[in-house]
Image (cartoon, rainbow, N blue to C red; front, top):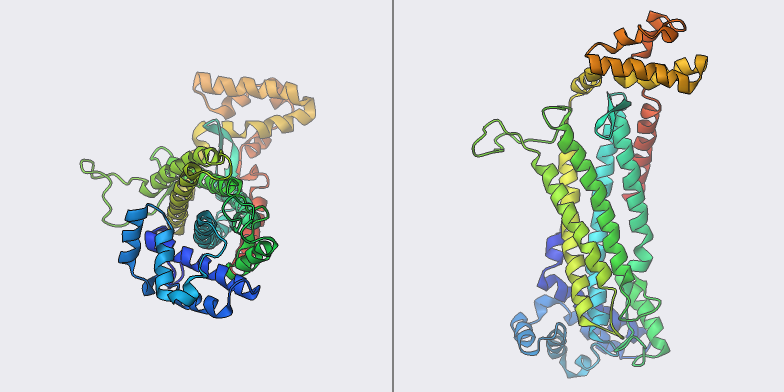
Length: 444
């Protein structure tokens, strides 16, 4: 995060939470002063004094221990420092959840803005890598087996495509998720009336948020939506980290996450260069996904308010935001200095002795004799190659219907994987540009 801002972990400390509540109380007072609900002088005093550094934290903590209430002791202390004239107008017409939930979302919005910065940084790295590796031929794999040739740049383009949609979803949720709430005790606005709706809008403007259309204390779908969106982002991040984890295995040897000089992978095996960062991302992402069921459960609020479900969603949102910050930092660290081995990628394409090019030969032959019949011919040659342990070229040349239609030179040309990567280079270039354009927009 930028200089002077709290880190994501710091945003969920007790002091940060208290200050967020105070910021909401200030926004409430300012809004009500504009509408002549409370005196302007009182709002000015409240605004000036509502800084945790000006309050006695010992008094607040003693009050918390005595009352067991999450907000009242903070209001008592703010009342004390504001004095009798202004203090009496603090928290006018609001109920605890109005302040605590709005305060929580104020903190989450700071996380949200930070996540978008992190994602822009990651997309910038992906953009450069996609373009650089657009022609790095490697085995495209389906069901864990060689399918057809691809390029590493294409693989990154796929990741960019997903990340772009995650950004679209996160930004598209802002108006629903980051909302001020001033419904009063049961969400009916009985204590504030029609002026409450305008007050809520003015609070939103003050806090850089949106106004909750229905300020009911039982509504939690917006919070659940946000956790679910973060879980989806985490799932994509985990998929990417798992791919690096797999391709880093010696049997593949195509990638390696940054391994700092002096890093120790094992206490007993000196040679170990473990995918520590990848494993961290996968584990953190798995934990994020466990909070989706809890978030859904928290929507089951009874009557007009229920502390149980508030506790559940608060726990879920705090931990999820902290984990997503770690996940995005982890991915950025992985790809900022990732090692790519194109020679090994190319060598791995040849492991099957040309079998990876079966589709290309089948399609060319199919133009002469029909696709299905061509499939049967190439299938026979491919199975003979595997079952008999013989070169694919050799078994191909034994298929009479093939050699009658294609020369040996033509067959050899069809076995070149670099000439059968489809639109891989195009996709890599296209999504490299898309990522760059989106990064520019996000950084404005």
